[in-house]
Amino acid sequence: MTLKKAISFIPPEYKEQEKWQLKIITDRCKGCLFCITFCPTEILESSPEINAKGYHPPILKEGETMDDCAKCGFCELICPEFSIFLEKDKKSSNVKID
Ligand code: SF4
Ligand code: SF4
Image (cartoon, rainbow, N blue to C red; front, side):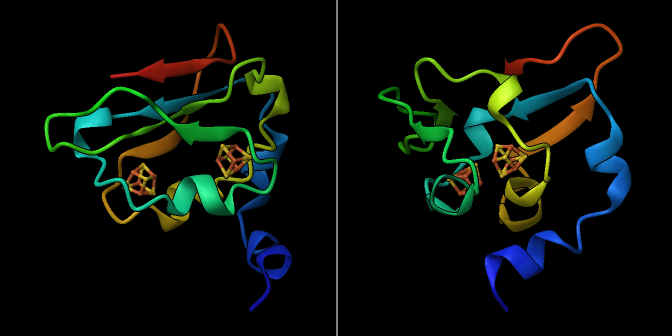
């Protein structure tokens, strides 16, 4: 299955919502790089920081904002540790790091 085809399976309500927060629970991350490698908009990179497990969790690349995120939910779908996901946010569209 191509990445484009896989993204077409993302529920449409994800794309319809304007305000999403990308939540990253850094200490759950095991540094597999799936989210960074397969993000279609290439807005993620490894943090220089090390988490509690000794891995580099993802962060937004410098200069990128949630406006650059496609809200496709693909990072959430492929993260084996449930450490990155989209959350609805009534007030703003941003990235929350825990
Ligand atoms: S939801 Fe955003 S950060 Fe996650 S894969 Fe899609 S474009 Fe990338
Ligand atoms: S997919 Fe999940 S575990 Fe892998 S680097 Fe991204 S946040 Fe970490």
